[in-house]
Image (tube, rainbow, N blue to C red):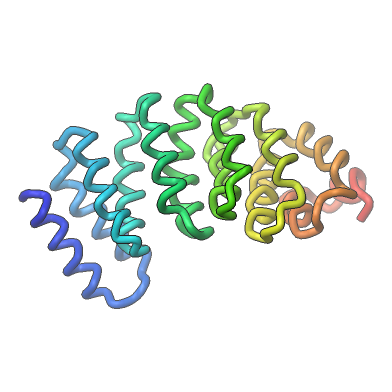
Length: 218
């Protein structure tokens, strides 16, 4: 089955759904990936780019899913491709979280030396890119891998103007309280009075009652 046929079949099935249905879309993605998985990774990434170019959520979800399925083929050069996708296609929280909590998150987990490059995302005019600067580390944090650049990134986002960025780094800090509790509590104590409450509430969500009362001015 050639690429054009695959894309046409995907288009037909997606349009037949008629509404957002994430489980069904992931099922479509999985089925058609079996038809392309033998292709060179660069060819599959090219197909992902075609789907992303539609700027339609359903096709983009499939593109990010295929990209994640290629995780064993990532190398240092994959960063340039993924960052280009980030700046070109990530426009809201749902595509940020899908891309960064899977494909891009795995890339940084596999090559932690790339993490310092993420700091520049905090300077973007696009709030979804700034949110990505925090969310992309959740994949690594959940697997016990920590990079000190995270502190600088959060500090730079501390009083961001967009509430979804504030929630994004709050989510990251919440995940950090699981595997890096002591250091995260120390950080939160330092910034408790400077951090917006929406971020702070997210950050301490997984701490128990005694930990919250002992460490913070609640």
